Length: 347
Image (cartoon, rainbow, N blue to C red; front, side, top):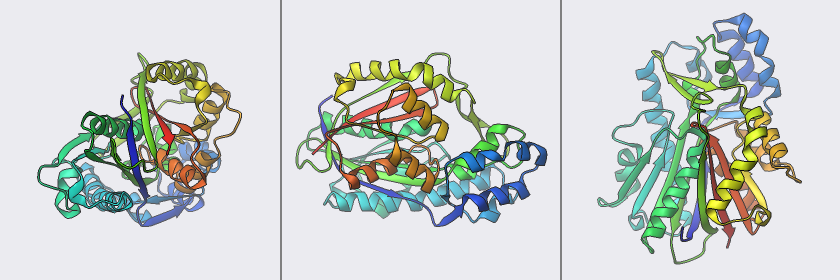
């Protein structure tokens, strides 16, 4: 694909911060099945997380909320996060909102029809003829896949400017009534947040050039990760085999995606990986035989938890601040089971 310039990047989190010790204590008090919680509560201590930001005060999660109320909170909080990161990304790109020609929006933790971009276009100041591409169902891989889609659309029409926004409110899907161990893992792991970027083919170089992107979908893996739709709300699907699966299967998938891109693995200066969890990061380091640990990924996990699709951009934001290497490979894993990757060249 022709390169598109990454002009800006912004990240944001909601108002309510919760420390991991506080989250563990509240979950112990509120979780319906105490014996199951006590058996698995060590996941809070071993998650590598110190705090997260969530869209509601912690007492809200102990109340009885059905799907309608959960989705109301999603819409209200997603609108606020959307406007925050989108405004800052446009401003950092040195543009006015009416200079944006199209917008790609990624979110999988709630339902918005009209979509989030339509709900916020007027308040953001977008033109009436702005092209909108909402994307759903990509989970944690959605950030990388969504930015790649925005870059492809920009490259298809040189000079056009595309805004990319991803918002996830994972915490509203926390289920304290569940007897599924995955519900406890999600309660220990998930946070909320958003990210946005502006891309353009041609013009000023900005942060760097998105030179290529690709995906790998493993067959017969639909049950590894995702959501189940249940009466009280979404229920998380996390298969315990994910780290073991990655150890065995990640390296050839990365090589396959890089071959699609025309990029060699030896030319990659650093991975910028979605920090899905400590064990996932360990598996990535082992499978790809990395010489340097994924330190920024662990820092983001410590400070923000797993925010699903936006999280990789929290890592990228820190990498940019530290100094972007010549070629960075963004990677994320999501439902499907899918590897999404994107190659970014420093300006």
